[in-house]
Length: 256
Ligand code: MG
Ligand code: MG
Image (cartoon, rainbow, N blue to C red):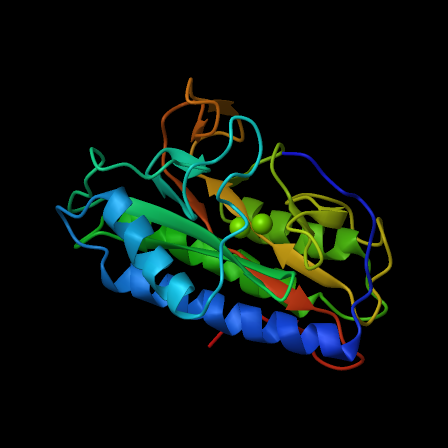
């Protein structure tokens, strides 16, 4: 993925548009979540997302992104697939799978970006715990999105939450500033030291995205040049919200 590393402080008007983009993105993800059932293909899930995006006159920044151009509006990553799975008609969900869906929404040139992982039917207690830990790490990181903290405090919150529970964070894929582009500065890794990195300022908007693995931090990319999998084939999960730093509480943009 290419990066525009400049940090853009958003105006109140831009934040309002991003909040609306985030609301639409939440409705896209909700529509996808509703369709997650055994036998459904990941292409069906992408179609569900595109239907909602179209209704709002919006597009996902994922479609056509990068090299080779990403072909769909969502990414759909199953079990060992950590991120960037490509939806297809051939790939059908099975009971017991866990699937991560990532989607972005562009509204009036501003981007919101969010992801969740969910079970397909009944899932194992091990898979349930992985989802809970990854979601918990996101919540812990969001609490750190305050003026006076630094990006390293956000990163450290994720790493500590995950590693203290015996799981691994990826070293290769990171959270990022978001808004005028899908990927802006600052970069916010899933590991780091408290007190390090960029100071957080009101108007900064960051996509925080813990990517958690059961058996190893190592990943590899499949021959499709997009799908990132755990190197040992173990389960993975991913949750993401776009969050604004304000003078008060952190503002989660990608909720209903
Ligand atoms: Mg995302
Ligand atoms: Mg992101």
